[in-house]
Amino acid sequence: MGEAFREIMKRARQSVPEWSATQVNDALTQREQKQDDFVLVDVREKNEWNEGHIPGAVHVPRGFLETQIEEVIPDKAKKVVLYCAGGVRSLMAGNTLQQMGFTDVVSLTGGYGQWKAGGFPFVEPRTLSEAQNRRYSRHLLVPEVGEQGQMKLLDSKVLLIGAGGLGSPAALYLAAAGVGTLGIIDADVVDDSNLQRQVIHNTERIGEYKAESAKIAINALNPDVNVKTYIERLDETNVQQLVQEYDVIIDGTDNFPTRYLLNDIAVIENKPVVHGSVFRFDGQVTIFQPHEGPCYRCLYHEPPPPALAPSCAEAGVLGVLPGVIGLLQATETIKLLLGIGDPLVGRMLTYDALAGEFNELKLFRDPHCPACSEGAHPEELPTYAAVCAVPARQLANAVS
Ligand SMILES: [Zn+2]
Image (cartoon, rainbow, N blue to C red; front, side, top):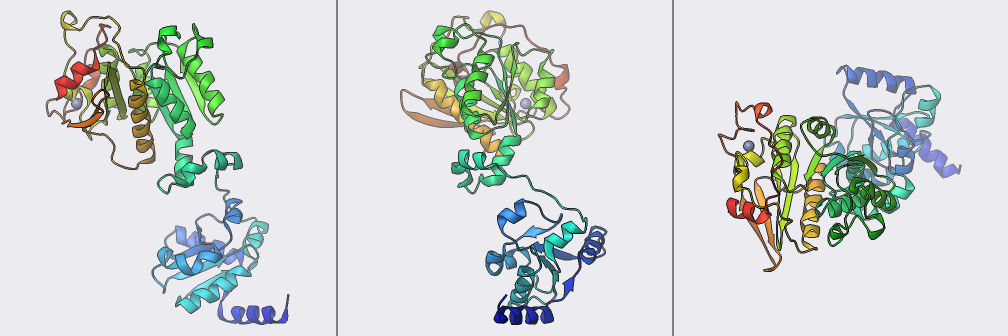
């Protein structure tokens, strides 16, 4: 330590009072009991903070102190308790704050080292691993996502109803994005006629369960993702438990019974359903967010009688179209999970691939909806026997 530095430290000590770890701990206890009010600021570097810090502290690294402290503490009369690793940087920081006009600044003597040695409590914040920092680097560069958002995605659980045309692209991109838990319910096996659009499967896995095939593809893409497979159909026996377990449901089904069943339970459980459907060259996507926008029954109280239901023949679809719609569903899902942007609640986005046109339809809640209106009893609504797939185009026409 040079002479000049010693002199600087001496002056800093004369102007910035120091507290012991015990004193800081007592003050924190009093603050918890609302008998004291101050801000505890950790001025160390990010990597030091990440390795552990005092509970209740805010982090303003020494290098950013002058530029950031006024945003964190606008009131310069407020008491500020500073700490670093050993008590030197916090003294210097205290001096800086005094020069900036802060009138009540204290430094923790011996810093975080003394704090830990004294057996006082500390927290080790969760951070992304090095591998995750690399994998999600393009997310981390987006301020609306960032490290906190990425951890939110890793903690999120999304249920995909079906690993078919819509579920395949949605599952792949949600897995790539690092959505930590993906549930996939599908009782079907991969057929060669699926591969024109269901890109999560491949020729080798023809004959395997779709849910298992999807799991293989996702595991190969991103080991961060926990895939839970359900080789069954969604019905009254399993729907409630499944919906309860997940944050967002992606509806990739094409039949009435499942859609109504899912809707009514989602309303009861207050879970958003990201709905998509495709037919030939047309697709549509919307979010049924219970009580914030319309639910499926707001649009159609009941399915048409089986006699009027469309024929059960497989509907044709341009192979790329479910890719577009499934990825819009994945996009809306990520927005919901992160709480960013304007979700497609009360709006249906339609896509006409032949015309190359997107359009938007406004959807409204029905004050007499049997599922989501005030006083409705969604738990008492009937379930329906499997009838047929209904082409999406008819729904789009019915809505417009
Ligand atoms: Zn409704």
